[in-house]
Amino acid sequence: MKLSEQLVVDSTSDKFIVGSREFNSRLLVGTGKYKNFKETKEAITESGAEIVTVAIRRTNIGQNAGEPSLIDFIAPSDFTYLPNTAGCFNAEDSIRTLRLARELLDGHNLVKLEVLGDKETLYPNVIETIEAAKVLVKDGFEVMVYTSDDPIVAKMLEDIGCVAIMPLASLIGSGMGILNPWNLEIIIKNSSVPVIVDAGVGTASDASIAMELGCDGVLMNTAIAEAKNPIMMAGAMRKAVEAGREAYLAGRMNKKLYQADPSSPTSGLIK
Amino acid sequence: MKIWVNGEIKNFEENLTVYNLVEEIGVASKKFAVECNGEIIPKSSLKDTLVKEGDKFEIVGAVGGG
Image 1 (tube, rainbow over the protein chains, first blue to last red):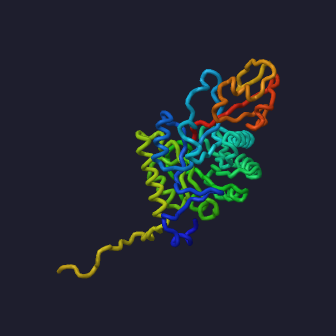
Image 2: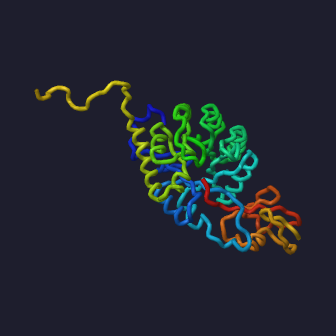
Image 3: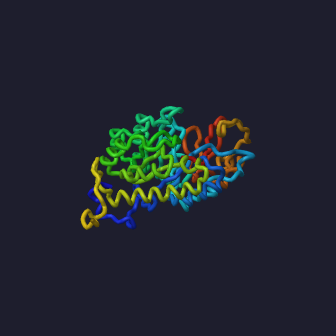
């Protein structure tokens, strides 16, 4: 959303629109790294998230085939699944993975594209990401795309037709918070599709800062799953995203550098 | 006949449909998707598609991830 729209929006009618879908929650969460599926479900429910990311992997075959699966706990009828391409290091593998995801989820076309560059940093390979995005958009997918915080690449991905641009705040799973708010602001200013900070959020204030900058949403997994109390952290993140969004919509006061401004009257003091 | 399923070599009788295959390995009642030799086999075709010697299958599901 651009600054000019701020004054006409009140927070109760503030819908989060991604592609052809509409949501209330601006917090998107991953389903990995939890102790068990029960904890996954409790944390996700507490987070209030409507969109949950999932990974696509080979199924157990033979004797382990009967093991409980994520889908038994997080029903695709209750949440919007966002299948990802985590672990893919080239365009071809990520396209193949998302086509399988679409078949798996009965034609569901909202996906998270992430093409990684190396195993150490999990930094996105933007060249392969752009190639994959072109094919997937043409193939009818609504692509939410993980990318670097490079404003030029972000714009290229938008021009290809991605429905959301998802720059990292810092490295995946690092919890280092928002390292370059200035780049995020440029991306937000230039984008006409939602911008979602994906990766790097460590604690509630990071999520609030992302939303105060004008991000349309925040996607996280590790910050909740690796908290000492994931369910409490999930609630903290829900409030942080809401608080940051409302602060953004409310429009913050101007900063006055090196100049105090008293809130109490300067006249009528006792003598 | 020998086929590959998720990277493992498996032995099956002839005249097996892909649907029979997913039943045999215990995933037929789950959410899954099947790829054979790099091509997706739609759910609607599983019962009409015969497995052939040397076929390479990838059978996937959704798991927790970020």
